[in-house]
Length: 400
Image 1 (tube, rainbow, N blue to C red):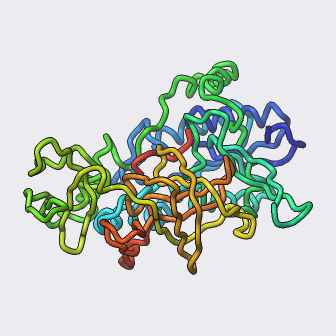
Image 2: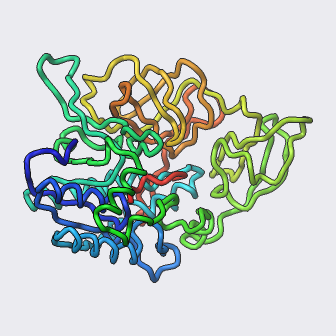
Image 3: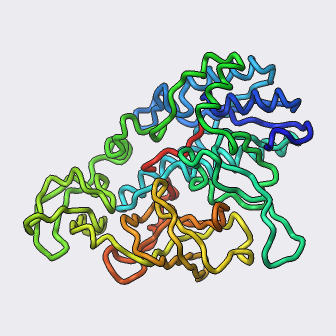
C-alpha cells in the first residue's frame, strides 16, 4: 500500500469527510510528515454557488478538516480556490446544460483543481499528494518497451466505491507523486479505522452523494439561478410527431425516461430522451432501441498512460455507473473514437468516455456524440462564452 513507503512529506487533501481523514491518520501512523490542505471552493453567500453542510467542501467541512489535522498533529492550510472553481467547474457546468450537454463537474474539479492545483502546491512544498479517492496506484510494464514501467491508476479493491472513472485525465507523469492509501480498503473498514483513530467528528459522517453546489439534485434550478430562464421548446417523437412542450433543454439528458410529461403515440412504447438540440430547443423522444450505438466520439483526449502503450483491444465506459464494455479505438487529432463490440445505450454528450486495459486507466475524453450517423447529431462541444469555459455529474466523483 502507498502509505507503507519510506517516510516522506505528504500533503493530504482534507475534505472534512471520513475517507481523507483516515488517509491523514494512516500516513501519520506510518511515520510520514503530514500536512493537511483543504480548498474553499464555493462561497456560502451566493445562491447559485452555495455549498450546503454535508456536501463536499462546505464551510462546516473545512472546520471538520481542521479538527482532523489537529487530531493527527498536522499543520493545516485552507486555500481559497473559489475563483478557480467558478471558472473551471461551475461556469462550464451552466454553459454545458444550456448547450444540451450533460456535464460532470466532478471531472473538471478532480482534473484541474483537486489533483492538478493541489499537486502543484505539494510539489512547491517538496512533497507528494495523497487523497481519499478509491483508486489504486500500480506499476504497469510498458508492452512496447522492454524494462520500462509506468506508474498507473487502476480500479480499487472496493468496486462499489470505484472512482477511477473521474480520474482518467491524470497524466501518467503525475501518478508517481500521488498516493491513494484507500485503494486496497473497503468503506466499512475505513469507517472502523476512523472510529479506532478517535476521529469521532467524521467516523459517522454520511457519504457525499450529490454535486456539492446542487442541493437536492435539482441542477435545473442552479442553472436558472445562474443564467436565468431558458427558452421553452418542443418535445417530438423520433418518428416526427409533436408530443408537447418543455420548459428548457437543461431539464433533459440523453437516456432519461422519467419527467418528460408525455406519452408515446405508439401503444405500449416507453419513451426515452434520444436527442437534445439546444439550437432549436427541441428534445427528441423514442424507444430504448433508438439509444443503442456501437461508436462514440469524444474530445479532447487525455492520456493516463502513454498512447503508444495502449493495446488495440480495450474496455471502455460511457457513464460512471455503467459497466465497461470491450471495444477498439482510433485517434484523429485530439478526438478519440471507440467502437464497441456490442451496442451501448444512453451515450450522452458531456459525459466521459474512459478507456481501460483490464483494470488500468489508459485515458479518455468528454463525449461529443455518437459516431454512427444516428441521433443524436454529431455536434462538437460549443465554444464557451468569455465568462464560462467548459466541462462537467450525474454522479459525484468527490472523495470524503
